[in-house]
Length: 595
Image 1 (cartoon, one colour):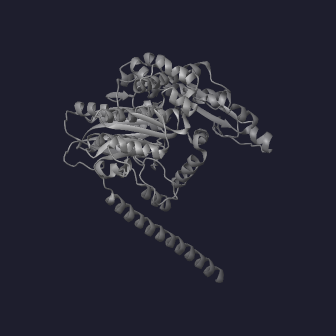
Image 2 (cartoon, one colour):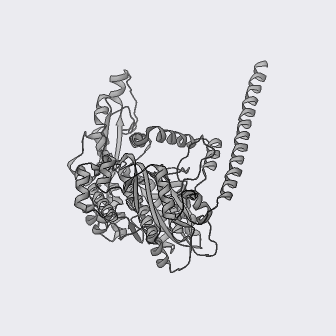
Image 3 (tube, one colour):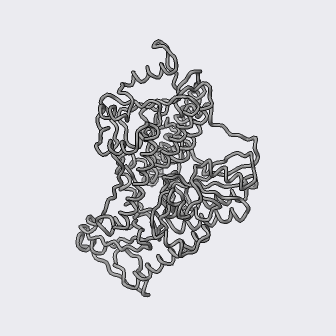
């Protein structure tokens, strides 16, 4: 009996301490919310101000659609790409904002996102207002963004990392061979290179061809835009890149990549000059996050008609519990069903930034998109940095598809990868396995037994069948024959520019273009935008992590690994996805990182 009371007391004490911890977290969170609210209320935008953009983190498509640090109560909102653009557009018309200061801005995002943000800055300049950029060091992507500015300044011991683009792929076959792991790989499409890291030690000729083509296309786009902004001929820019002249501050200045060398205090004085202030005057700077909160974030309830903008950002997976930065079929099917049944929603724009993923999940989402169209709601697709494989699967039957010139799309193909640990267990650990089967395929799919020839044929047959289904889905949506689709499919990746030429998309354009097309197709002039899925603030995500079991641990782990690994995170992500993904996949060959 004494033991019983001991355990009962220990259990009650543990519960009490947990409740106490949650109480203090709640108090701290409430205090944080109150202070944050007061802070926002205090934000004052004075006349003759400069809008400061300083981004050194990953930029999601939709605000806060990302896992946050579980240890920072005062984490601020992470503005999404389109809210950043909205803020810049608002500032263009705002008489209190005289210019934009790009301060050490090195966001992490894809080339299509850089393009969209760069266009917004160009449009801002068209009003006669200035843009000034400063950094200690410019990466190629951050310089691409900065080159649109009236003045580009760099630290006297900095430089510009301008040397041409490259795309590097890691191959794991040698490591797997050393571990005696046998990777059984099945795929459809000679360009479906998602499996190459597990079966080859270098790029196949087909993969090298497609990588070279889209990297060259992106480079030409970059050269053209930088050349136009900096008034430097394309051939001269290629020469500067070949000689890596921007690596030193003097080289960057002499090659006209930058306008002057300066320290940050000198840049601030330069901003005062542009505003007509004296050295004694105080420079009024407003951060874009505060500006968005003060003058952009508002809900317009005047218009009853609505257009739903659905952000499909991240890998496509099977599942029922929504996570930031992932597309799970369970929540998305429910979301699309609600949208279909909402009479106030007149049209749908699906904004895709996804390398694909589960074929089954993609099929489930596509089904709801088709039902939306059948219910009389036009569906337009707007492609971001990447909309390939499963990302293209869910797009292919929309009324119209728009992409950026630098969008990576296509990759119409499927694959499956099965690791066999039989030799690893036996040769490395001395562990063997045996089984009793009642039927021929009873132990099928077990990691500890190699596939028989019949089992291999069975899997390849399923791959071929699903690939044929994929071709049919695309053919129906794009008004082509499966044979015509097959010629441009086979897992091949295309840029948005090329995708338009071969009929995979309808036209080039931004999210705004897709919205205009949706409104026109729905026959409405005035409307308000409603965004899906609903994203939580950092504080709400933290409380949810503390009170929810299961996938919250995955979110914390994802955030920690992303923070610790930095640019090596895609390697971890690829290996994690191989372990995590079930069934046949339609996804990009790898997370394309172009530097």
